[in-house]
Length: 111
Image (cartoon, rainbow, N blue to C red; front, side, top):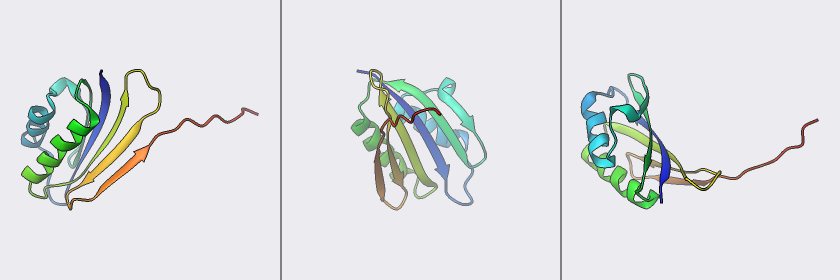
């Protein structure tokens, strides 16, 4: 079962995202440079397909946050199973907070 992930990494104030941070994400999540979708000084987005479950990805990102010692402000993960159209989302913060979101589809009539 594959899942598509969009992982946004937002660095804490005063910490630019560097190759070391991206390498750590690559090692933990088994992604490579081709999976880097966007990169700015303080933010990067990875887009990849994985056979890891969202609970596994969540645990790996918790480990990264712990290892990065508050250099990352938050990691925002949007994911969907390959057979579903709705995305779900979770956000992990450096201070240990977690937020969960469930995606839905809303149809509006065209006028």
